[in-house]
Image (cartoon, rainbow, N blue to C red):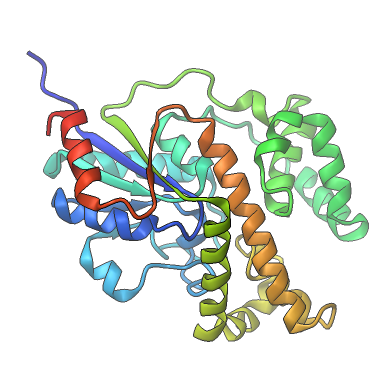
Length: 305
């Protein structure tokens, strides 16, 4: 009889729903380690605005891919897939279970399901798209992507110029949509995957988001963003919580408007996260305040642990 494959438990759901807390409790219950699949938390210069786990949380269980990159490095979903799969080989030698947690659906799927290799794109295509972004605005890129790749347009954060440019540079370089390069069949992995999703009513999620943003402001997000203003063109900083404050620093909007925009754009982000994850029929959903013991028992029964 073949040995049972090790298990990767993916904890997913919208931002501010409580994924970090659940992942830590699961890691403690199974005496294992955590891989972060939150693409915003990879970068060491961004702490408050990305809701990086606290020192107490990080010490409660071993974490990987938390602030181990710099905003001055390019780091793609393909890089993450490669690095995570390589790390699993070590982790699964000493653990039957590993936890992966994050709200970046594309990054979670890259590890659990795999992505096709994307073609190399001439640098001048990316440079031209960046020029168009600055001269014509983000709506021009949004409109082009809507026509070129409506499927990906429905999934992607259309307020994130890095994501738009990535999809459009593939399209311009190959004549094929970004979606066409996404894996159609799941690759063979050396582990089984179990998806655990956290959910709540939309209004409750929005309340938690608004409260989290207020807490970030109190914790010093304005100063953190101001220190990053000279590097605002970096891909890692094309994200909610920083873009809006950059506009405030440049006198385009008031601080009150910036904070309001952060909350609104984070709510939109959460809506897109839920749309992405709801399409994954393999996710087992639990209400956000379900007793952890219930989830642990479910995992054990489901996987004969």
